[in-house]
Image 1 (cartoon, rainbow over the protein chains, first blue to last red):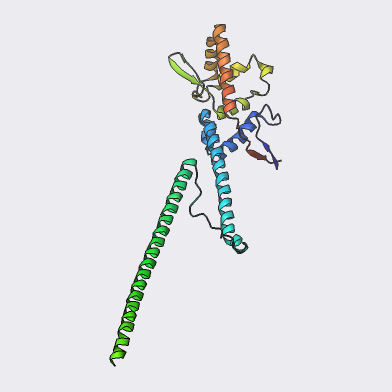
Image 2: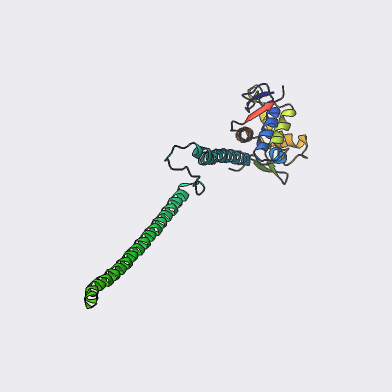
Length: 166
Length: 109
């Protein structure tokens, strides 16, 4: 099998124009045209089929690359974590898909920042609740201690009298 | 951009001449050579003109095609612009049929 670029008849003197058209037909059928459209259709539309095929190839290429990126993250989050150094933060798989364009990226960042703010607010609330609980517990303990020490002092005051009375 | 065609009326009938991949291929198979247009500059426009009937007026006999050709070329200025339009039509078709991509093709040896 010989492999090469599809060339026009003026560049490929070994093939007649008809042979060249046969090859062009196969090429354009690969772009989505039917044989009937190629041989009998309006050729001014052929370039759009060709451009659409290039766009499909570009997308396929991009999604293959994207698959590779996700696989890389998955490996890092599994195998990578197995070999991470002691004390190092664990590698996490992305919590949501990669942004496809600048607008989506902006939305994603805004969403992540909002989630971070919510998390911080929740942590702050928990800390405050814990502090309030600790303060209340301390207050209660002090009250109890005061109560106890107050009672104890009372006993001491009365005891000698009691003893004296005895 | 719309496809180039040549339209005219002859004996009360409307004609629209043009080319498709199939009629271009048929033109070559009938003996026309795209590779050596310079070698038959005098006969090429006439052959291209006859071939252009194949898309929409296949049933028009060669005799009528020749009559129309002669009539259209009776005025030399008209004939020159017709020749120009015919070359332009074939050139446009062969350009559009040429893939611009670098897609690989395979040919059995």
